[in-house]
Image 1 (cartoon, rainbow, N blue to C red):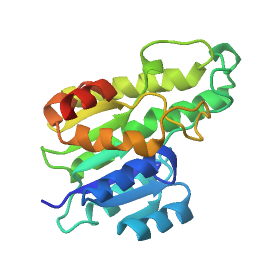
Image 2 (image 1 turned 30 degrees about the vertical axis):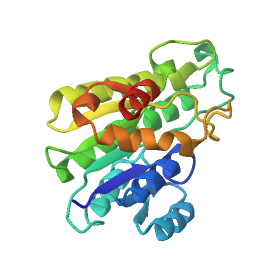
Image 3 (image 1 turned 135 degrees about the vertical axis):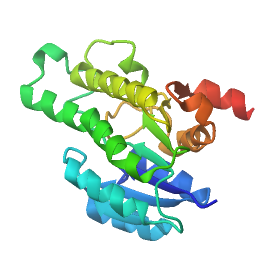
Image 4 (image 1 turned 120 degrees about the vertical axis):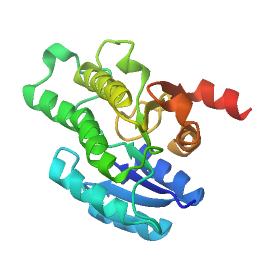
Length: 224
């Protein structure tokens, strides 16, 4: 069956790698990002579609999901991966007590509210067997000094995901790839293309995904 996958934050890093992994598996990918040129070039390469999308603007997200729902051979969206995220400052050196209100608001609006908007606006285009994969990290559950509002935003996003999982027929869950080497935090880790298959696998196990956190250990055990 043809699969349509909508990815926000798809202009680079983990979002781009995830879009590539799903496209390699034969999915039609719909790419959203504030960098319209980057996603247009990637969509041309992958045979997908793109639309400039700022996840802080729910009307942008609504338009993107409508666009994504028309991208495949069949109407609708099968998988949503909200990857758009920001980190203001240097990772590990942004204690919450020194965070500017503007940085707090923008981080929460992008990283937590942006997840809410992506899922909320995708649901009308998804059947009951749809899947939502939200990237997360251990900092959302195990506080570490210096990660400030970024950690708080990821914890908030996890709460949003768990509540959607309780409220929706679709499988809504979290995917934790561990530290990933992207421009978001600049702290190194695994290459995005090494962990992107974790997301395509997570989409294939909706019973395990729904309401839970799937990580590298679960992936390796399942695919060993």
